[in-house]
Image (cartoon, rainbow, N blue to C red; front, side, top):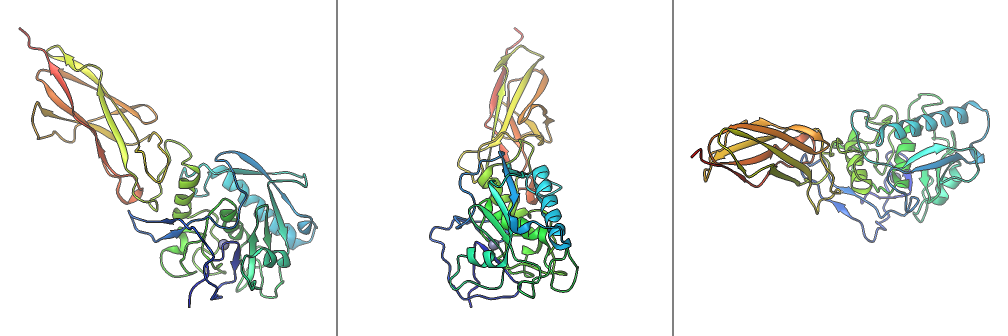
Length: 359
Ligand SMILES: [Zn+2]
């Protein structure tokens, strides 16, 4: 039996579907690094098109979400809190500076980029599957996210209302559907198998109370990777998700002068940035450890650990080498950070600094 990837509807836990994939041109992100799995990105049938990285958009609640009953109030509060958290942390993960996501702020206006509604019928109706599944717990269209109602269908229970067996957490549902709205597809991991438990909220089936990650309130490592590809990193200091394909970096080194007097000094400047042609855009890479190594002219043996460069501006590092008495080769080195992020290490080309003879 084939597990369904239903990009617009999030399905009840444990429900298996036999419908085949309807994605014509999926982009498969090959993983390396820590090999967390394979993500199937969009195109997805969902999401507002043309959302711009870092821009601010509005959201509002559909009239179906109006009312003062405790259920709607609890759900609106949870959703509002989650969107505010996303706007602050820019990909959700509290320990990362992640992706440059579009932001959403609340408006009382009836017209907004994103409308949040409360209707099981609408959630089922917006599902792309045919036949449509009554097990849809939430669904995303180009302009709205629809939540099924508490008790409709009868198994639909929100943990925000009462943490009982089988309940779903609205914050996590919001994250998942917002992921679609922002252009993500699904990861194929099932609800409680493999690394998908907490590395992503973009699984085809929702989790319930007690399952690892059922109440996750931030995007997982692999969700951030997909966002970094789509919207770019948030800043030069961002961590490049280890769920990205390996990211080659460019490291250049330039001496302020290639010819110096005997026993004098020279300033080296190194620039570290993402190489062209990677899954993520070319950006300067800040706050990393870059160091200088040296060798005799024509030599192949390099001093280590060398001189650690100081960062002058994001991604630009420098150091002064003094007491130069012989012509030497110089290189900058950035070590592979390993499993912590997707960046690869790099060594610059060699620069020769010629020391003029005393006489
Ligand atoms: Zn989904």
